[in-house]
Image (tube, rainbow, N blue to C red; front, side, top):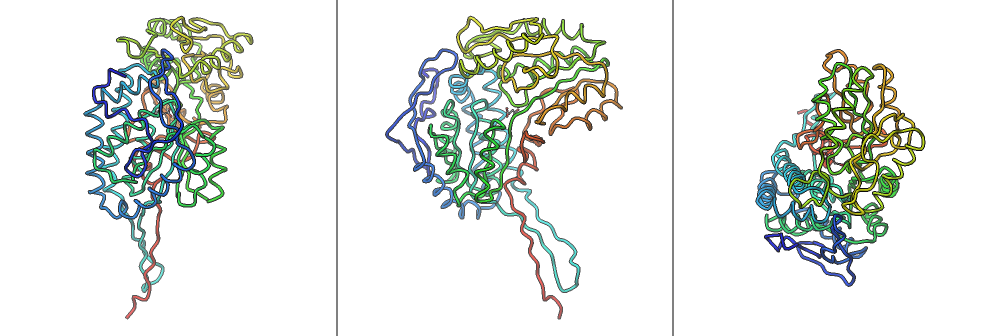
Length: 485
Ligand code: SIN
């Protein structure tokens, strides 16, 4: 932690109603690359979560009454501070999460971009007028903030997943409470410190950090003063949280699991496809919901693609994310490594072949070798489950209909990618893929202006873009009558 230049960014208390709250118990935050304990964080619980909801409720009236310009100016300050402190925020992120420093800097830029984008987009929350069915009436539609927003965010993007939700909420005029993952709370608390410096009023942005996931989760999904709940994480937990939200009929948006197909057709630019597959698969050591999960390659280019892809994967440098040149950091925990190793072992037992890697790495017990498996079929565990690790299963296919059927044969539908230069095929496949986001000859699809989200069991709602703002707004219909003389 000595590498952090601005020590004030290192906070260990929850941030509630504009002040830092200690509590009696603590938990450790550790560096997944080394196992070293970075610091101890105060363990907030149900009482602090309720306090944060109360603070957000109290702050709502004044924050929503501000003009979009006023909110935008404060958010712009927040964005500027994130960029100004990008290196320190990235160091904190790498130390607690593990991703390579350059990638962590990219995440801070990505997170800050949501704050900048929504600071502007908040000024474009337009209403509507609708021709009325009779002359003595007028129909007007206005949009209003939904109210207090609660969220639970994951460890894989400890900055950007909070920024993407909070920026849209704040721009819409909502106030916000987040419970970040306990594995990576420091990034969230650093964001709170910068929100305070930016002049965002007390109670508008609250961070409660604590290990009582079930208890705090119940408050955030069932408290009557919360109007909307938003979650990024696994489909299994998402289903549970949706059920909990039902008791008070909250508006929900859910960014859940994926199983992204990456399809390479015979007519693809193979070098571009290899580059795309590398970027989409090995980003964050494969621990991303939109990471490529299954690589489908048409038989005519199977050998060429596999050879070039293997060479690219073999060149990856694995190690501590704070070391220069490292491209693959640790996984979040040794349990996560066990899970990935089991998927590989079970699939190999069913006939998959290890072309590269296929085991734990000597760098430490949280490291797994960048792996390529061939001879994989779509029903093997490695293709059915979300891998969330640096393993690429390659599945061969004959034709377009067959690959579409295999790609769509799963319960989730977050992101999909394909490479082809045939314009007719591009449209057919883009329309045929049952996914919320499709990269066509492109693997890096996430950005603030685009609607991020999935279909099927990958969730509901969109984040980022003008659609992301709608998720934090209610439509109110005003009917004016009695206009006749
Ligand atoms: C995620 O893993 O859920 C986020 C990935 C992204 O925003 O690109």
